[in-house]
Image (cartoon, rainbow, N blue to C red; front, side, top):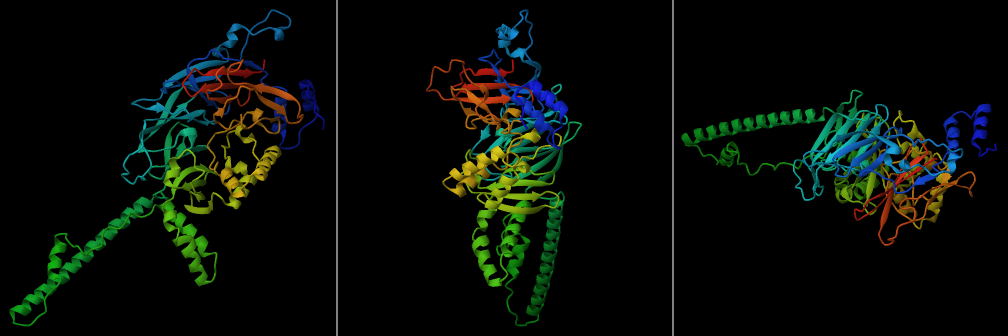
Length: 564
């Protein structure tokens, strides 16, 4: 059906016709083809702050102070002014339009960091149901920290990491959770994943997945810890078993001592009566046992593998075992595929984790070096699906598995697991719900020189960082087409360009809808300096902020793009 570009015609069409079932939101989003950020204010007068992002419901703009100590929260408003002329649209905006305060109202400032801590400027998670914000502060990393207390060798240590649960309505800190001498990857929320009211925190240093629940009252409650133990009573069971084993060993040692004493007594009686008796070789050893000097006893065994690692190894073993029915062939397969690589599997460490639903986790395993590396493309990696309720491994894949890539291509939305309470995050464009994104993916796949390398590159994004994409309708591939090398919905810095970024209408391929230009209006005079840009799009309003900065701590250039 023909759709007019006129807003009035679209409103009239909405009144006389109803959309197909399940498409009402998509039909409403088509109005954004007409309502676009058409005007830009360059180099706005802005406070010296660090921009993070808009909350998913658009109620708050999250920023931090330059000294990484304070949280500063703003409420998006809108530029308002009066004009006495008849044609106000052709007049220039008033001078106050160049000020940040004309578009945003500061709600409060809260100090989060203390005792040598700094706010992690890349970390922020939002619970839309209660309008809670989760922030993180930490001390500096210690790269050569010794591996003590069960820590993994080669993983750096952070003396103190604090997670703050803040009610964004008034800035009250409701609860905190502190991790000492640990390492959690806070950059872009890589080490933390939020699903509804459940939060998973990955301790790389101690290889534990801490599951916390965010109560409506604003409390962080421990649910379980996965790693060394899988069930809540595993530690109690092992400790009770160890105590029973110690009692059994002590009982056996006492029985042995009684038997030796009886033999010594018998030997003494024989010698007293003039009988010929053999010597007692265990006599000296008996006294050594009493003094704790038994050198023939077994040395203490190495510590057990953790519960999660044991389940992973047993799943791999059973999978190879069930591949063959012939016992001889089965043993050959076990030798080649399991025992030969046993130490490699045993040395795997947890890199990242994400919720697939309230009961299942997608866990990424790899080497110790890859766990702290910036680029993990050259490191082997594995994926496991883990059921927290049954403590079972459901499936296990290598990062080059075609089966996993097929699942990722067909059901990408399931990997973007979002809260059931989040309305706006349910309309992200992925290659499993958008034909244009799927065509782009298959085009890149056909251009790839090596299919296994392409599969590894695509699966390297798993597990997907929590709340890492903007729900803005201007990133909807069904509405607009843009250069994803310069801008995308993913929350990442991009290499800046002096040319404006064009948003082309998807329905009318030759129609330019609007442009986003970061940096000064006339362009940068110094073309040799490398510049990076970040973009903050409001999830509902035709409003965006572009921040261009250099690597030499020069003042950032903040532009605001809005519909005039």
